Amino acid sequence: MIELATRAPSVHNTQPWRFQAGPGALDLYADRTRQLAHLDPTGRQLTISCGAALLFARVALAAAGVAHHVELMPNHDDFDLLARILLAGDQEAGPDETLLARTIPRRSTVRGIFDERRVPARLRDRLAADAASEGAWLRWIDSPPERAVTAVLVTRATRVEEADPAYRAELRRWRRDGGPDGVPAAALPYPPPRQRASDAPLRDFEPDNARLEAGQATARILLRLTAAGAAASPLGQVLDLPWTREQLRLRLGLLGHPQMLLRLGYAPAGGPGTPRRPVEDVLADQVAEARAGSTQDARPDRSPHVRAGLAPNARTDPVRPGAGNRSASVLT
Ligand SMILES: Cc1cc2nc3c(=O)[nH]c(=O)nc-3n(C[C@H](O)[C@H](O)[C@H](O)COP(=O)(O)O)c2cc1C
Image (cartoon, rainbow, N blue to C red; front, side, top):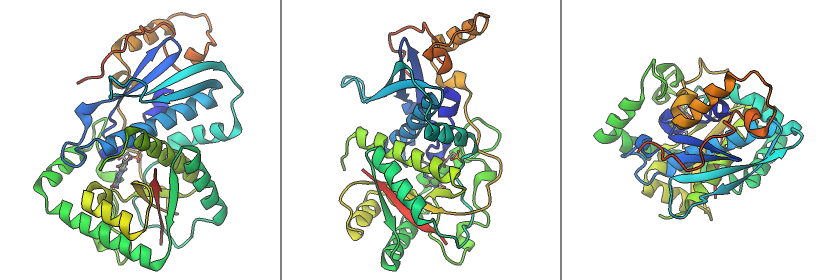
């Protein structure tokens, strides 16, 4: 289950999450050592990324027949504890969550050129319902004026970021091949966006709950798109900079906080997926040891913990984590 959760998208593939299993619960922590200090000083994108991992974990649990419910930000004295998943016994695995769970290993960010096919109305309705089910609002950017404004703001943000040595240095650090994290060359768009005739270039205060909800909504949308043979890539730049983000909000007349801007459409499947850190890296050590111990026990255990891939008797005190395309946006 944790392995499926780690397949979630994350900004620059930083994978800024840690899991801690206890009796009857799974805690999700932010790993601030993986926060992008320059691009993401407030941790907004880190929290969205963790929200995506939370949704993947929930889908995996539901598909394994494990009932659960989630508390967001359960401890007001610990803002790194983003969510607690409380396991609540058995339930029948629903067909929709099973479908989405099967999709997890196939999903990846597709940065190539999309073809002319539009996302059909039925799928659009479904995506909007998926976003709403997670407490977010999906806003389509369809009209030519809105698309033009969005493209201009994305372009401006891209130029500002590309002219910023600290931004470039941070991007370089996370653009790498052969490791368990970061973005490998094979996942980057070809031809590079600047050589394309059209297409937008790729790439306050609000509570963490809203960001977690946006992350979960985004993750559900991405799985739904993959299940339907469609694809998405985030256009993050415009939301990185406070002033382009605010301009987008004002110019599109948005009521909420824009959290994700996605380009949706159809494209050939991308290359090999991006790497992920091994489960042992993101689960607290004590839990990994308990898991290893439990695999030596030959007796079958069908408890929700085991089906969820969790240690049944992990310690309870939290271990602190180491210090032609249509656009859509997700708002909360
Ligand atoms: C909050 C967030 C922001 C992202 N921003 C961008 C972006 O601006 N440009 C981009 O190409 N990918 C962006 N991504 C996608 C990640 O780079 C991608 O999820 C990561 O490299 C892992 O690859 P995968 O999604 O193919 O598994 C973003 C993902 C998240 C969760």
